[in-house]
Length: 170
Length: 170
DNA sequence: AAAGAAAGCATGACTTGTCACGCTATATTT
DNA sequence: AAATATAGCGTGACAAGTCATGCTTTCTTT
Image (tube, rainbow over all chains, first blue to last red; front, side):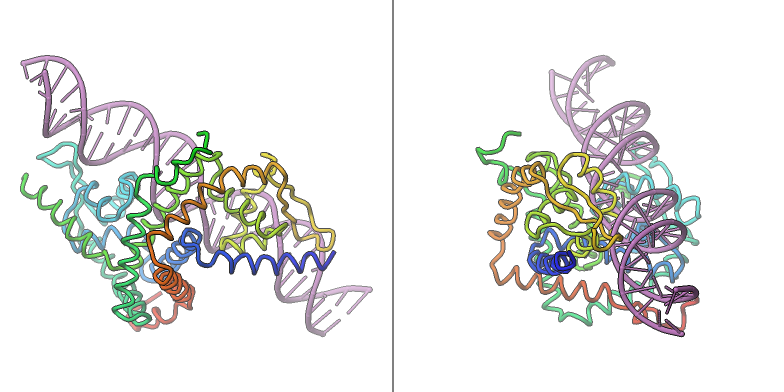
């Protein structure tokens, strides 16, 4: 029935409009689009991956850091860094040395080659940030970031506010 | 040098503060936290994955849809659905049938079992959305969603606005 | 000093996403 | 009618993330 197929497209459009204002459904697509755009720009400016770029940028700005430090800065799991760094070392972008003071820690430092890779990608990524700032007023961006802070707090709060329902059985 | 290790923690804190207002660095963590929270809630209310939940919800609200429709609604690649749906069919949540009108299309419909799985998870996910609405005023949420729309538009715009630099060589 | 707890990191396994490719079906053009 | 283009979907391969586990090192408690 051709009408039902056409109707499914109409229903899909309505459904998409219906979920437009659900923050939780907006985040995956926004994140994905941001990542894809970033990957394309990095591909055009030296071929770094997103994690490589982010790490070189952090080390360039902050100096040598531990894996613990990097995962804190990037708000990501240490395992992501543990996996990315050996490749970056092999590419010559960083050095990794066990801390003489605390044998548990690995100190990650930028090399000259890493610095060069950073400088190759930095202009296009800076232009990207500038272009976004051109799209929003400083007040709007401040509002957005503030709401991201509050959203983060909400997302990381204890679950019991949702779980305390007598219906549930798990 | 113990001081340098302490300094790296201080430098990490400063670096994290420095990137607080870069939208592109905020999205990965926000998305990840949203996903983790959603996964925990779904685990507590029937064990659905995020993609299963989202798909059951879409089918419940919109009726039978094609894979093309679902990827449009969810703003995700059709391959994500192509991979998730056979498992959902095996679990008995959906039926999948080639369209009699267009042999290219697969019509996905909710079963009674799928409807039950949806109803099991729906209350906790609705409470989650309500809890977020309690954290922000309607005006704030509208502002946030509007800014997400503009961010989406920015993220999906052609790259040449960033690429047209005489320095670049790719 | 010894025992126990915690921290830092490496690795296994998995989830959720994309992009690319190829096959089949349908639409469009010639 | 035939050729060509496009659409829809399935699958390969990969990126980016997490959570869990275990080993080693350091810190804390007894």
